[in-house]
Image 1 (cartoon, rainbow, N blue to C red):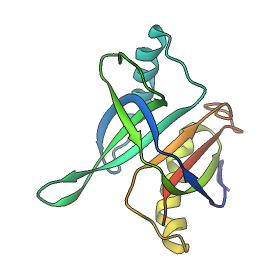
Image 2 (cartoon, rainbow, N blue to C red):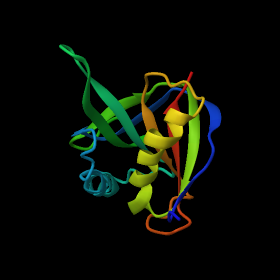
Image 3 (cartoon, rainbow, N blue to C red):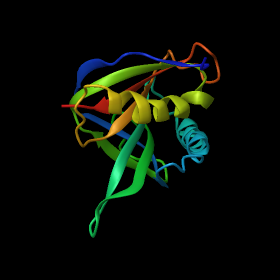
Image 4 (spheres, one colour):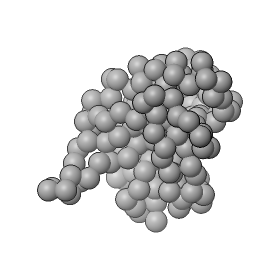
Length: 160
C-alpha cells in the first residue's frame, strides 16, 4: 500500500489568477531540481517580507517553434498577486482560468511526484476526463505540512 492517497477528481472552474515567482525549465522526467527551486524561491522572497497563505507550483509545457510541443516544461514556484518590484530572478505569470479536475494528494511531499506520475500514467488514461491544453498546477495552503503524513496539496489538471 502506498504511503499517500489521491482523491477522486472534483471538477471546478478556476478564475484567471495573476501570480509571481521563480521559474526554471526542466525536461520531462528530470524534476530532481524542483525541491531546491522551492528552497531558493523561499530564500529570495522572505527577506523582502513577501508572504502569502497560498503558493502555487505551476507547470507549463514550452512550445518549440520548429516542432510544436517539446518535452521541456517551465515550473514556477509562485504566490498569487502582483508586486511592484520583483525579487531578482522572479517573473510574473498568469494562471489562465478555465475548467480543471482537482485531485487532492495526501501524504509527505517527498512522495508527491509518485502520485503525479500515477495520475498521468494510470488514472487519467483509464478515466473519462477529456484533457485540454493548458497549465497544470499545485495549490498549497494551510493544509500543506511538508514531510507530515497528513499533509495535503491540491493538483489541478485542465479538462474540457
